[in-house]
Length: 315
Image (spheres, rainbow, N blue to C red):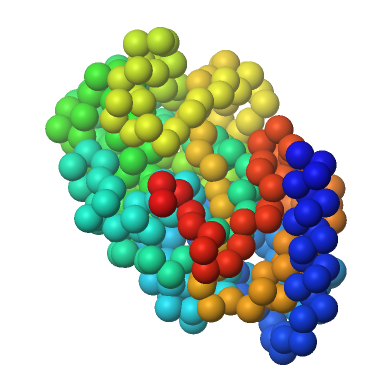
């Protein structure tokens, strides 16, 4: 691992010496305020702006489904992307489908810059809800569709699958993205929503009406059912009180987030971003607990993957 890091940083240094024109600022696409990905993007942008020879500016969108086409075309410089979003959009419906579908825009020109850290997410109910287990979600009003953040369609689907359920077993309340899902829960239009652990939106809802996360079925049988439905996710147990809306030890699904760019991004710019994040990684945790695991050797790979020949997932 140490050799990989030294190689990557050495390569970054060489790239920085290349006579390439650097921009005054670059953009970083994220989810909207209230999400963990917006908080993470804000932290990364601040670290990069303080160390690179240019500024990094956060550009929030409704969700990855809306900013993927923009980064694919090169109009957006960088973006944060979940593993399932990246794989489904990069591969396209001709090469990869889950649950018999792939509604993502095809983005063959996206390139992987670096892996970050696993992000936990889970179903969410009001604190006084009678729903205690994932099996009890059957027949309830559950937020779904998520056209702007398709990753969350599969997060909910994977949670349902762990209990042997499908979307046909619940009453779908259509929402564009996760913030609107929590709004529907708070307003009483839905009984079950979904959001990432320790997000600002969950904390807001918890202060307003009281909410709690509902565990996936993480028994060996539940894990097998979930992996058969959606192989991307792993799981982790969050102890009671160690996260907002975690009232008891709760098994949450986790997925990786990546920093991506487009195929025409200058090597010197990408190398400067990599170098800034890698060397200032200890400063990231101050922006969100999620970032405290960013680039941890136990959760991250070498940042040396770069260039037109560097493919994302499932190449």
